[in-house]
Image (cartoon, rainbow, N blue to C red; front, side):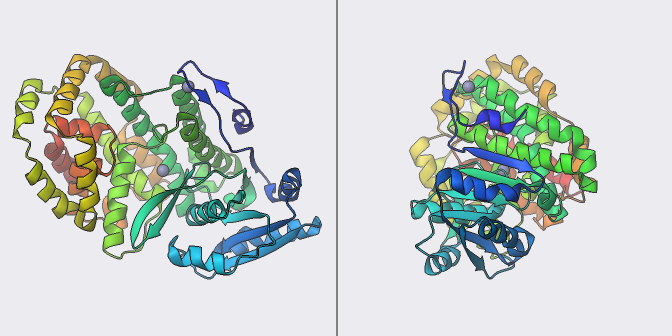
Length: 446
Ligand SMILES: [Zn+2]
Ligand SMILES: [Zn+2]
């Protein structure tokens, strides 16, 4: 599949939606930076404001500036002077104070943090932006949200997608191996999130698109087929990861939500990220956390598919739910974010008796189908661990210093970060979350 086939068109789909993306160009190839001037010319841009940090300046932004100037166009680089850039008020303010208003397009050079910062900055200035990716580390290249940190809280701000995504393969292939393995891990997370999406379809009648699921699955397959070559920095294997990261971003835009790319494994990752922020600890790469979350959720799905659930006991247990006790537990496990979690619950009532009973009944009525679906789609834990482990990637919470108690709590409460049905909500509905949290902790911390 060629990503370009997904762009600049509207796909009238059997799911009832018309899928389209506002991303107009995706160039993932060797020496892709040479296309930057022609992309600027295609839109009539004369001068680019180049956003980078000290690392990506060396890796690519210098070349972007030279290439643009050699083509007779203008370029103003703005180098954020930090080795460990944080996407916060300081970064955005720094860009604003150094902005040259004669520029007519923003070009972000980097990945995660620089992509979020450039995306948000250009959106606020009502300018378009291109992203030149320097590492295939996360799937936010084609997504509209910008994850920033404001007052020490991570918030996803509404923003826009880049007009062009440029992936110079020779630069991506030389990026740090922990970033490449984080990107691979983010792709592997699609195995579990796609099962969550199917469960939401079966249990909640949620919007679902089979074509999109297959689109994401075919990208994962391409990545996994070549995964053994990633450790040698094989260019095709690296280009496949980059392409899959872009395709899943486009799939989110197509779906109108993040179902094709994010499920319970991401909720675990978000929970750990919040805890790290409160504790003032250095952030761990998104994909690295998602990889550990994916191993945990893969374990949970493999256990669930072989279980017999006592549905009568689950239904009887619904009456025992106590909102005040639940709120106290949220305060204990969410700290300063407890208020937003409690506010969300008051609004959507995902734990209320009515919805919970309905879901238990739906799972019971479809239990054979759900088990078959999981058995058909879930890889083994060993497959996940071997693939990530071969790159030296983290496969245990302790590898990124997540303590056992934080991990245990996350299995029980990470579902509260969003109103979204996943295996974690299913376990809670059935009263099984503590049993799973205990067994998963024993496995992960053995
Ligand atoms: Zn569709
Ligand atoms: Zn992700």
